[in-house]
Image (cartoon, rainbow, N blue to C red; front, side, top):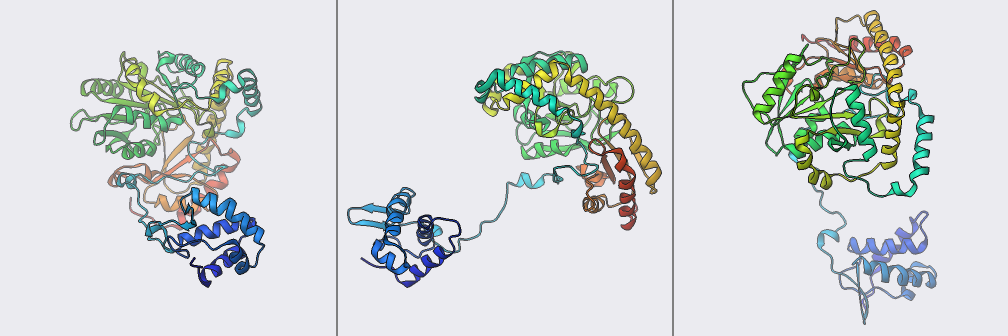
Length: 490
């Protein structure tokens, strides 16, 4: 038998000396495995006996026997590092790439379509001041939610631990259908409702169900970068459709899209409302072109002047519209529950794909949310939040008028959880970067544009998670940051 030379035992001794909290047996196992991977033990060579190893490593022979018998001979053989036969145990022949001490570095690259994704801002917990799209989670009735969740678990118990319906819990889908009929003028039944992990999963599902790679999608310009990311990741081509005070500036001539993404009730980030004339024209165009409209009803529950804006989904019969909603803004983000409402004609066709793509989960939370809605707690919470956010928006407007001395324009703002402030000629990306150092996380307006030539600069200020007492000092800080940077000519 060939006994490995001193470098092998030196390698083992060094590994054992650095074993830390590992048992001696586990350390010896790891050292033998690393010796094989790094070429200290050659292919087809025999392992030295326990007596020789104990002498060379100056450890108990019983310890070596234990490691060899329980780990080296069993685990390493099971993993394919060692081969056992009547003559003993020998080192397996591994591919050279696995037996080299310095394996070649592979290029760290993802598919090209993912490199086109727009930049995303990191999410912090707790969120920083002015983070867009974050509700006042400290106002959520957590004790009530806990009681309802406990009740659900007591009544259902282990029945909720298995997979559920791919489209979501029937009780929640029924509760959502009734809520939409009352609050959004949407006539649908539970079979048309699919529960998702937030609105973004709804966009992803729509993309998978309704389009093929290479299809064209229209997106609002500026607009929600989550939708743009979903479309780009699916290999779609994007065209930005400009937004003005009446929402998406729909023009019938030109390209024909497969998907049209719009947030008509409260456009993100400008806050404009898609006019009735444009809604009807867009619905008619989609009918004729064979296109699907994805209606993101962003922030529609929070409107502070006039009556709620009806959803496009309910304006005409057989509308080619998939309606998306989420509870991330109305309740709390980590709930990760949203929903989509499919047109009746699409329900049956989509069922096989939904079963293949989704697995029923979060069942206790879904049942709890259904109870929360059905017992009226959701409506009461929405009413309380409307009052809070209406007051905060007014106070933020006052703080901006008082403290932001740079020429600016506040866009729309009849609802929602944010105000968008146009500020010409600033490097809004640099402003946001410096603001994060001050524990503030507004969004740069320029980053919502698909086409750099159309960009306008400014800040998107979320007030949902920011107490009004913080507005004036925070705006003063932003004023100093903007004043400290060079101004452009925009």
